[in-house]
Image (cartoon, rainbow, N blue to C red):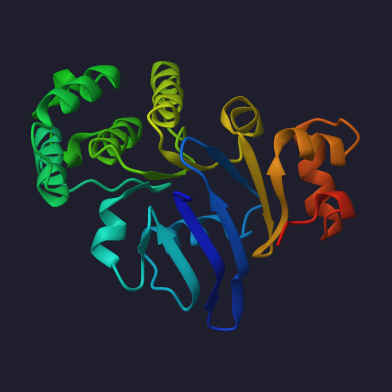
Length: 249
């Protein structure tokens, strides 16, 4: 069974079509690199999968739970790290983790929380309020809260934005560890070198539509062995992928 199934989702904002009939699936233990130019529909896609935006058209199934029919079950099986993390101003770092554990109904969560806080260098900021955290620390706290529940599906929107070099190294290690633990990860980023290092599969969006979906090897083959950057520009600047690179049904 696929960890994540996205079937023909469409999202409109007034007269603008942000996502146009997008479909893809992701197996457990797989990292999907989601890329595209600004306004391609990446964040809208992630917010729709996470249930932040209500579905207008289409179907999303998270680890066997239909988002429309089993909303709580679906949301319990995924974690979402937005591009602009916004912790509660009046909760401490430790209280954020306790709150997350309660939301997910977790037991014996403290050892995992301590491990995450140490890895992301937040152990000494346990009592710091959300309002006192820097941009990078807010991002690190989002990681800790998102990964505390050992989710089946993880959605990451520009996850390295604002991180220092140590934070970047820790985040990359944790993303790979999530994969090893069997999670399906959707990684949206403009950092194509990050996608090349971490992703197993690639999904290129442009103007709300999938222009390519497949492995990185297939992407390079379709562009005669070019770099991922060359593939990106070739697919998005033409407005449609070459025949070899068109999205699969």
